[in-house]
View 1: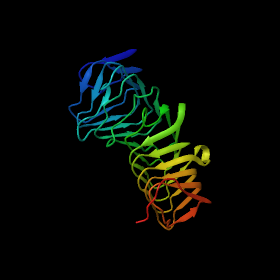
View 2: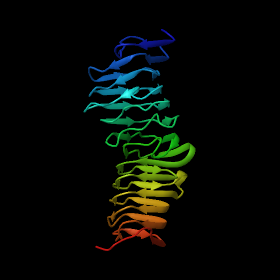
View 3: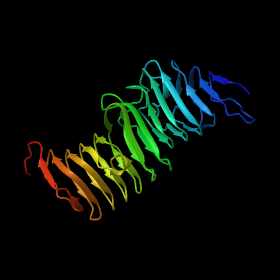
Length: 278
């Protein structure tokens, strides 16, 4: 029974009654094995690091990290590193965590309270795989500030993205929306590919039209997936299976003319760059 517990060399797994409302990583800790923690409020303080080191870390709790420079907070540089957070995750501070290898599974809300405290590498996968509605809130969403690496959305209750400062210009590299999942945002950019599987759906907040959806390379719509947007930017190709629907006010083409295979409910299609037929 303590107000706060500070950890300096390892994460502990209490077997008795742990009446501690706040547990803090107060040094640089390197995991030596797969670990599960259930602290009510788990924090990594500024100046400290939690190196997952190729292991699986499961947090059955909320997680908060504060950084004062780069390479603090969650440190994921080793193949096999996986983190599962059952509660809400909050990233804040003036440095960027080194999350470049592995994956992060979020079952609660994700809040980023500063411009660059959450910027995973392009091959790092964040999974939004809760079962109740999830909210993603970035202080400033853009490719230059807060963005994802690769992103997979599989929550059937839906994930809503919003920024507190500037534009809602959310971005990730490879984006996958799985069967039954719903991605809701005002603006979203897939920096490489965008894939919708099964009955996946992309739309704006509260079911409105998304203001802008940008797929820099292939946009691949499978099953009975749907997109509901005002403007869709297609950097390269569009592939649609017969049961899919693209419902947009305008589609802008930048590298080739597309031949939709599904339902193409688009009153206006524009060539928005120099296109050479092949």
